[in-house]
Length: 237
Length: 237
Image: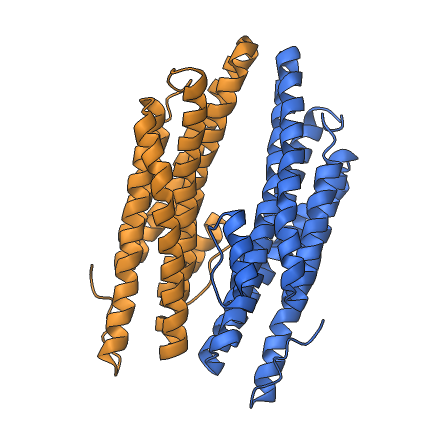
């Protein structure tokens, strides 16, 4: 991980603490990325064992959120950071909450998979691997951008979500047709719909992490702006 | 609003600032509660004008989240709170994020309502008023508990979510039957399903706010625990 020029503090210890928290975020992000990849594989390959492992490991993700959050509160209380240090801590505490929710998606997909397997060992009605891979890549890239606080890359990833949305819309249309044609497919379609929606939401969560990168780098809150407004704000500075 | 014994600070100004932020959270909560009530009414009464107003006002909710968050960062940087003051600020910044997401549900319901009205001016397939009222009440109660940092009330509300989940399950079963019986109902059912799911999620968000109350009062993170674990932890202290 690159050093964010955090080395300007009088206390080398403070620096080490901040770096440690950042590393923890990366470890957590890596675990969430793996969970998501495994969840999509488990669903498509009807791999019960893998699904159970993902559900089991969600506890690790949850524990990491709590422990990173605690470290953030500790560092605020002890080191009383201001300016960009404080922004970094706030960005981290919000980012881990998004990561935890992405972890929940992996868990949820696997729970749906197991429920489905208990009735029939058939693969999912539609192929969500492409949508899944797309969002896993977004997550991978946004973690990378977060590690380097790379705003150009964050802008690119922010825009990428539009493509995820388009892909999702296509899947919904396909599933609607299945249901209309054969009402017996409805329960399977609903499972596929719920999976697709959860995966699509990961794109939004990655966008949120992009906003925390903007916030850290630019010192300004970019949430709840339209895409055009974000582009303008970023261009101005 | 009761005073949380915040008046122990050397600086009366600090106190006033903390109180001001708490008041802002209550104002934001009140607005979100109104938005949600209006959204459910707009959907059921096919009231286009009301739906548009809710969508319009979502911007206010978003702005409040950003401005309260800014105030939290400012108070950390300026006053360097520790212990329960710091926990209060962290609890607030997480709570407003939950409130904003509840606001998004109101906005989403109204957008679905408008899309539905553009095809047909028929009311929703199932009655979501009871589920809606239930979650609005939960939100109302949790805001009240947050204002007083009332842990007993927070425990009660935390448990309430189970009833919301049961009510939601009933609605899902009803909608599944409609779809099976008449495939032409599918588009309307999907709208109703999406509304019901969004409303059900509000219960989870209220539970999250309860956890922030536990965190403030007990100084311990209660997230990601099972219901039983939460009861045990709360009983112990």
